[in-house]
Image 1 (tube, rainbow over the protein chains, first blue to last red):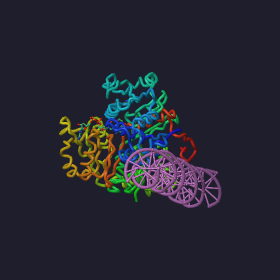
Image 2: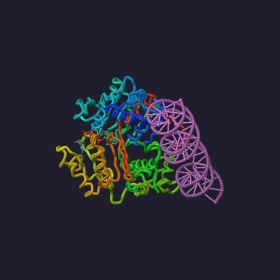
Image 3: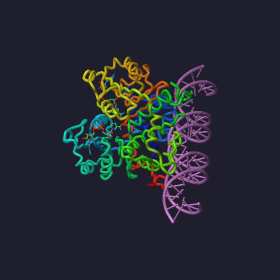
Image 4: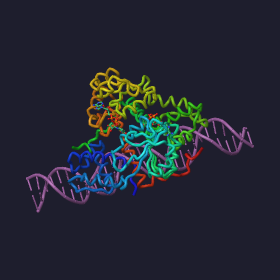
Length: 221
Length: 221
DNA sequence: AATTTATTGTTAATTTTAGAACAATTATTG
DNA sequence: CAATAATTGTTCTAAAATTAACAATAAATT
Ligand SMILES: NC(=O)c1ccc[n+]([C@@H]2O[C@H](COP(=O)([O-])OP(=O)(O)OC[C@H]3O[C@@H](n4cnc5c(N)ncnc54)[C@H](O)[C@@H]3O)[C@@H](O)[C@H]2O)c1
Ligand SMILES: NC(=O)c1ccc[n+]([C@@H]2O[C@H](COP(=O)([O-])OP(=O)(O)OC[C@H]3O[C@@H](n4cnc5c(N)ncnc54)[C@H](O)[C@@H]3O)[C@@H](O)[C@H]2O)c1
């Protein structure tokens, strides 16, 4: 049974927060606590738990370790997935460095570039190869996820190489919207859109979302 | 009248694409063309146009220049908004460099850090100041948007300084969810969440969104 | 051990977002 | 200039996401 995209995003966020709680020695957490830490509502948390088929001992809150495990068993692949970063300029390098070691089940196993300054070196902690080797290495290293951080004009051709060589998911940071075959999951993000959204609401609202200040479940703790 | 967040995001994306079309000498565009370039449906485009109160000469498509202007008049502030980046490590530097010059109405006027290697220098094309000067300079430079790229442990305190000194919108790239007063618009993004979403769907679906392959409006052109 | 309190799981209601359908309109064609 | 074709604006419908409401349950309190 497949979970909604929004729920999956939240599970990832829950896990980040739960790991933090765990490292501080906390063992259980109530729905409204997890909600507060994430700035969402407790109902939403409980609903997500329900969707993923997770339940707690009533009145004790959710067992943090178990919950982390449950989220992991949904998101992670037991043997991990291999990831490649294509284009390691300023942004690609920052991304690579940021990911490294963050999730043991997602391994950035190679980066690719055309720049002879980078090819053959270690960039952001990972070996950089020339893009000419991309098709070969994608298969050899069993890479199933690609992160695109090349200049916009190369986005389409690189995406094609990825999908032609077994990649099943792409995280596209270029400004070029891609059109992927149905069997490839595509996630796109452009921070210009984010900042323009902020700008719009700063301009038209003096900042601030809606005006949610209702007294519900969520205002507890 | 306030537009839905999703519509605002799309307007930003439309503008990016339209600017590209304009630079290629195109003067008009049909709803289905704009939709195809963005990989959404034509209805959605027309609906967004309706929401923003924009209309075309029927049968000629939308006037690209006019549309860009209309989007600008909604998103942009005539005199522009000033933006600050807090924390110019790998990621902050990449972000600063990426934004610079991308939108003339959003000016990154200062960056802030604690590292003496950076303070006083120009980082990513913008002067870097010591965070100690943050309160003073936020007011002096009339900064209304802050981009947070500091290490997680400083996110909360930096956000507080921002909101205490007139900032009305925050783009938070740290892994710490923030709790903002109602009058501040907050946008958060973490790429770990994005990649884990990709991982989930690669694992549970062999990639691929839903399975939308219906013959509608959108399949034209 | 009865009563109160806190918290969950779930259903129902609401809101938000997207899609389908189609009449109205304008260009193009014969 | 009538008929046809293409495209929009909008209404009506559908789906997705969120929130509210509440019964069920288990702990805590008396
Ligand atoms: N989505 C976002 O939020 C965001 C933020 C910053 C940058 N970006 C995008 O990321 C991309 C890179 O930005 P940047 O600031 O790092 O630019 P950059 O110029 O610093 O880096 C681009 C890198 O790609 C390499 N490259 C060029 N052609 C290539 C190819 N065919 N195959 C592999 N590598 C190739 C270059 O050698 C360079 O190292 C751009 O498309 C930019 O728009 C996106
Ligand atoms: N959201 C994302 O997609 C994403 C991606 C990469 C990094 N990040 C986040 O961005 C942040 C920075 O990441 P990075 O890779 O650039 O790390 P980094 O260590 O390279 O940079 C951090 C910078 O912040 C400076 N700094 C430290 N304390 C400060 C303070 N109190 N005020 C101002 N500046 C201060 C440091 O001197 C350094 O220059 C982290 O929180 C990281 O989690 C987010």
